Picture (cartoon, rainbow, N blue to C red):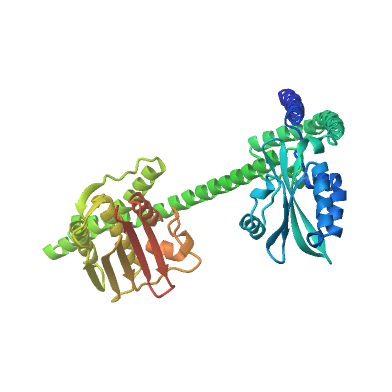
Length: 470
């Protein structure tokens, strides 16, 4: 906190020096370059001539008035060009510079609403003025004046401006000193509270919210960020708690799912040893039952193994360039073997063209087989499973559709979450770790693709994989 106060003090002093240099430097430049002539100064300086032209705007028809105007212009060292806005003609011109102004030049400025006000060579200045009649503009006057004549009335104003600048600088100095004292008194309490709050959060207390008053104090940004961090830590803590509950529930499910096939394997083995399977056909049936249960246990172990590798960043894909139609021909051949045990119909339609694709065929087969196994598990007897693969430039699309029990609307947003198993009674009935779909999503995302699902309860489910051609 002391360091912060010192830095604030040094910063404030530095700002004062910068402001001082700015004002002093700006005033020096002001004296060197002078003050630009403006319209109000011009109107005050030459009010008599402007009034004379306004009152005698028909002087062109009276040579005496024209001579008086020329005499006034010469006396004041002025040049003048008058432009009639109704007839669009120059009705009067007196002087060297204004003689170069023509109707086209004036029309261009009038149409584009540009100002004639600008500096000219040889200490001259060009200024425009509108003359009105009955509140309507009738003439445009273009004057060329000498800066020496007009500046003689400005130098007094320079000293006044200098005094105002200095007064402003002193006022800023006082305000800055007051601000420093106020900052010093106001920042200590929020900093102490901030320190106490961070210690509380560091101790693991994420429940207590940071008050609204603190979030709008002098350290509002810090408190707002600290509140965001507290909410993130609270959410992280909740997620850890939920994950721990999921893991405990997973252990419970695994215990159940492993005991069932182990009990079946033991019973089948005992049947073989006791001579119950006396014929070759019975022995074959018993052995197939043992193999089926061993495959179930292997699938559970594989899911856990792959999930652990994902968590430890040890799950990787090894992509190679292969023809996509050949890759999926092999994958769908494996699907046919899996689908042979399905009590229903299945259709596999591979329409992939022979395009070279950067792919890990092993991982991709793992994802497809996982989805097909789920389709078999949750399909009704005598229903249909359809696998369709096609190319829609620039994406390879694989859809796996079943007409099984479907997924409830409430469960759909969470089915790709690790350990999510949906409705409990169904989870116990069909087993599984709740990791299969999360592994599928991870494999597809590592191929820079995406997997979508559409489902309606009791009306089947469709998983669609999108793989972009890269």
